[in-house]
Amino acid sequence: MQALQRWDAFLAQIRDRHAAVIAECDAALAPVLQQLTAGGDIGAVSRQLSMTRSRLMELEGRIEETFQSKVEAAFESEGASGAMVTGEMMKGRRQRRMLEFARDLHEPMVLDRLVRMQYAHAQATQAPLVCSHCRNVMPLPLVGRNMAIRCACGGSTEYVPSDLMKMMSATGADAVAKVAAQAEWRQMIEAEQLQHEQRPPYSLELIMHIERTQIAYYRAYWTMRGQFEPERSDVVREIRAIMEPWYVTRAEYEPAWVAAGRPRSPL
Image (tube, one colour):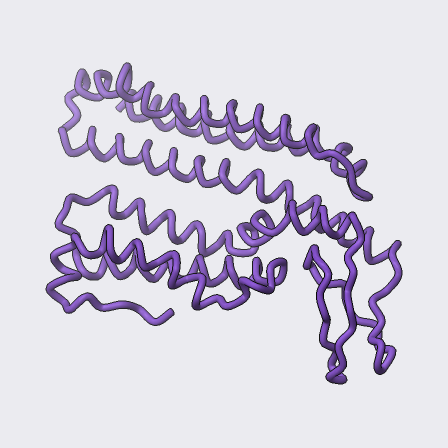
C-alpha cells in the first residue's frame, strides 16, 4: 500500500529531523557551556533552547496536521479499513508523544551538563570542605546555601557555598532531578499513552499502572532533588503532596478503582 509507505517515510523523516535539530542545538551550545563553567549569565543558553523548542514543536505539529489534511484521505482512497486508518493515526500520535518527551527532556539535559561542568570546576578550584573535628576532606554538597554538614566522624562543619555553587544549585535542582529520573519519566508517559489509546471506563489494572509509574517517577525525582534542597528530602512527604490531588481529582472518578475499595500503592 503506497499510502502506508509514504506515511511511514514521513514519520521517519520527522523523527530524524527532530533528532537533528536537537543535535544542532547541542553543537551550538557546546562552546557556550564551556564559557559558563566558572559561572556567568545563562541568557544565551535560554535563548538557544527557546528557539530550538519552537522548531521542535513545529515538527511535532506536522504529524497530526499532515495525517488529517492528506494521509487519511490517501488511505481511504486505497480502500483501507477504518480500523487501519485509526491504527495509523494512533501510530502518529504515539510518535508525537515520544518526540514531545525528547523535547521536554532536552532542556534539562543541557542544564544538567552545565551543572556537572560547574561542579567539577568548583571541586578543582575552591578550597576543599574540611571537617573541623577530624580534618577529613568531605565532598562539596549540591546545596546552594549555608548549612551544617555532618562528617562520618559525627562532627558538624559549617558549609558556605561559593557564588558558583549557589548559581549551580539554583540552575540545576529541577534539571538534574529530571535527568536522573528520565527512565521513570518515560515509563510514566508511556502509561498515560496507554490510557489515551483506550476508551473509558478504564480497568483497575491500567489505573494502578498509571499510579505506580507516577510514584516511581516522583520517588526518583525527589531522591535527587533533595540533595539540592535538604528541607525537601523527605521523599514520601513530597510524593504524598503530589499524588493526593491525583487521587481526589482523577482516581476518584474511575469506577473500577472506587469499586475495588480505592486501593493505593505504597509510597
